[in-house]
Amino acid sequence: MPSWLTIKTNLKKVWTWTKHNWYVPVVIVYTLVLWFVFRRKEGAYAVLEARNESYRKQLDVINESHRKELEKRDEILKKYNEVMDQIEKDYAEKNEDLTTKKRNDVKDLVEKHHEDPDALARLLAEKYGLTYLTPEEADKERRLSM
Image (cartoon, rainbow, N blue to C red; front, side, top):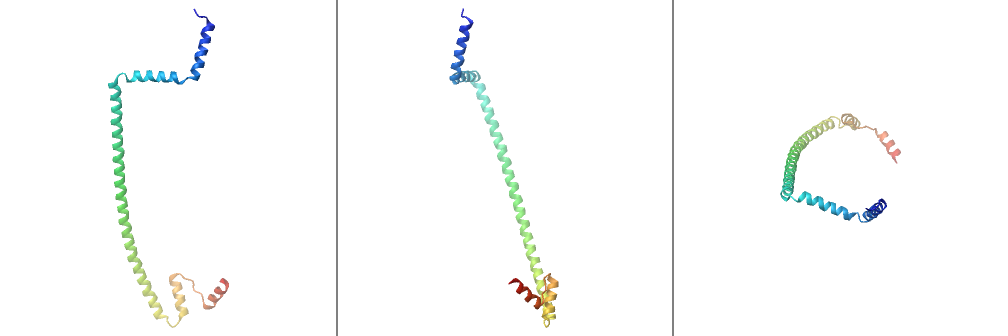
């Protein structure tokens, strides 16, 4: 019967060898696990086939939801473009109406005050939110800005 010191020395040698060659026992254990798991091939193939089928179904669901999102986005963009076209058309019509109205107002003011340019300038400034400067104030402003 081996003595305790012999067993202890042999265990130290095995431990030292295992620390340096750790991959050998790992490969052996890995091979044994695979052998036990896959020795019944039918069960392993059934598991792999079920996994593949589940994967395909998940991809189909993802692709379908993506297609629906794209359709919804396209529909929203179409509605947006229709609304924007209508708004632009309405704005162009109103802008033209306002421009025509302003032209007529200015024409009326010019006809009424064509003999008094200062009064005409003052009225236009009041009506359209402009600043009216007398000729003296305008000269003063020009000199200050130089």
